[in-house]
Image 1 (cartoon, rainbow, N blue to C red):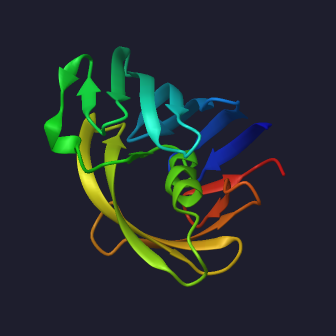
Image 2 (cartoon, helix red, strand yellow):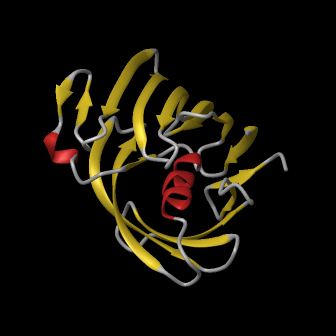
Image 3 (cartoon, rainbow, N blue to C red):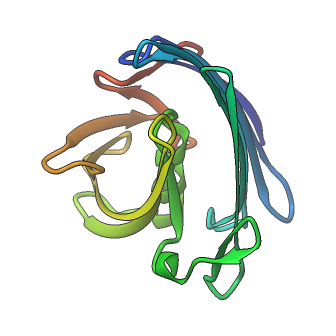
Length: 184
């Protein structure tokens, strides 16, 4: 499967172009986001690699903001050990998924990996990447499958909840107040 998606960021005046390619050995995702947030233009490019079970194995991300550039390089080995730019990060051990603040794509990772039955709720640990604050930390999140194409997402900040609508591939079509998909 190869799919291209365009999302509009509603709270940050942003646009994202994302490619998803499922191969025989892995899943490769790359995206580009441009926008305006906190009174500053920004540009983000990312490359994510997962195994066939949608478990993240690598993230490379470049962020440009106010003329400054930052590079994030994260890997996860088959034993669940994370490294950042070659340095061990044992405090991330319980995380399987990542959540990048400026893209709805990373909600697809746990949705596809978990493949929850209807009305089931589960807690996961994610590596949350707050792009504009240049912060990476583990967080708890919850997903509940409400219907064939709707999930209740809870987490990131205290008391945050959103009913996310997805397509047949688990890709977000509507994330109320934050993102909407532009193409079908």
